[in-house]
Length: 250
Image (cartoon, rainbow, N blue to C red; front, side, top):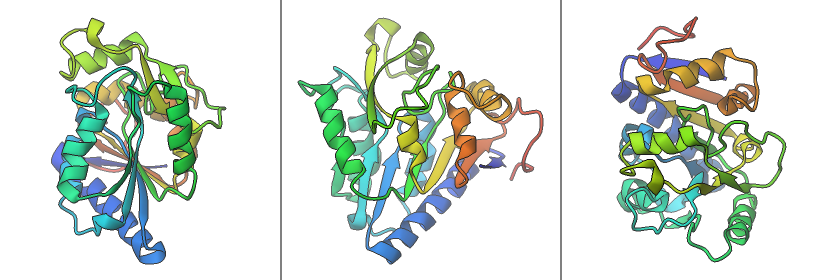
């Protein structure tokens, strides 16, 4: 895994979007399409906004997403389907996208069907973040590093749910769903390339744990260190607790 540190969120977003667009261009040139996985959450705002302005043939992009709450309608402000529709799909004109329907009558069957589509071909690039509790997608600690299922039904821990309140998606923790559908850790690692976008001081503890601890389910995002083609994009704030910096801030 490569770590790059930037002076602020804007320069981080520019560099991450540049790399993401390069990977997508190469896939479209080589195979006629690019298959991507997109993260959501407040940490991805600047990155996705920059990426949507890239000169990409978005009609040749197929989109999957990492996770979704169970029991939350798409029109809820915290819905990740709503997020992706507003912040990525409607701005680019992507026509091939696969939503995780958190309101499906049988979430496990819905997850199985989307997972089958996901595994029908390679994923060129996955965009991910790291939670304040070190989670990867909604794989809260201790994460399942073994399952081969593409998507899991997971219970959300209190730290994860409090993060959602802190980011302003819910007014209090009682409103945050207790379950979600999440892409599994092993499935994320199947992507040819991973672009991990992690700005902000509130992520500094998680970044330090995930880079400087042992690789363990207790710090789920630490598993990214096993993926040779991952780049972790940090700003000065999120990198502030690291013992050693991989690069000087740009």
